[in-house]
Image (cartoon, rainbow, N blue to C red; front, side, top):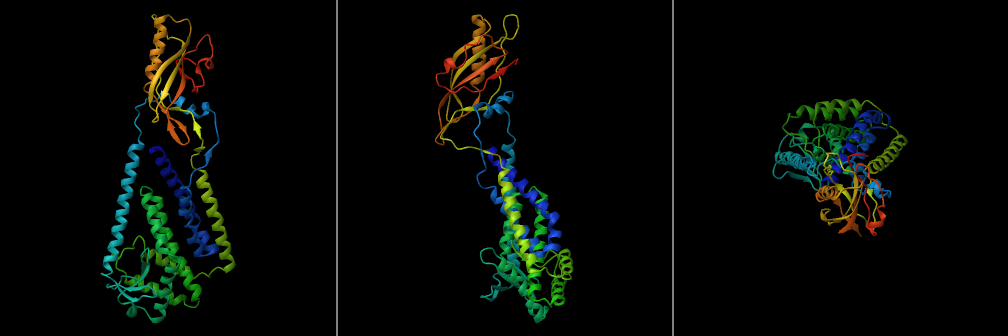
Length: 426
């Protein structure tokens, strides 16, 4: 369970990081070629691809027992009690997620408190609230019921024409559900709290979000570019640094760097409708490809089966016994192992030993060494109709090179034989 959780976390972080890095590289060319709306739309590919990772991964093709357990046999030298660092990393990640989410919630609540309790509603139909502070807006807040928040001095600070442009901008945020988009971005930041690239990309996404709203307003008021720039400048000049920080799940007019970028965009002509449609098509195709790649990149899951035999999971090699002269003994010991539903060894019995003319004492050493090691091993339990069941397997333990060879099949009586465990020579 821990391994699966860690693989899912790592896959999610790598997929979102790769997409975020790609979008950071192409956002400016996208904006110049297709417009600010397309550059903003491209960011929504990131959560779309992350959702694809929640789907069941591709099924692995059927493989032989030998191929399934080759990795376990190769890891025979790893002690059964080896510490798994993922047991520490997963709790640390969860604590980080909870801590970052708590920080964002507190930041959102602080913004709400500074609006006044409660903000005064001045237009229920349009969803417009009036804050008690002079610079409590303009902004859009709320997840379930987004509302436009205006400052107390809204009528005094902006002219009627400017107020119309400001309200049009905020209305675009409402229509597009941008507060919900920001909430999803905030959640992804919490999941990737350790990844500075995701936090930086989220900030660039919010800039593209504002630019996309500006482009929508200019499309509606094509002759109002100068008035729109003056309205943005008045908002920025009246802003008090850190007095009203941008709410994590809201849309707020702040930031000197953002203002420069937004005013610079007003100088460029808007792209044609045909070009914007082409951009939407390109982003749609890109989203589908990204989701498919993210899904296919997941580790392959074992194919569903009504029944599967037990197999190795974690094992350590037996001690290699020696004869009276100190020479390593050679031989093959076949053990019948009863495996429980949790993969533990319930019982070990000796089936047969093939060796190079061992004396009775040497014979016992081979059996004792192999049996003692197998009792400490961990197996993958046998599965029957999706449930773990008790089962028996034959475990061949080879000490150097066996001589003779009556064959394994003669004594297995229908019990699956696992990969041979080699101790000493090849």
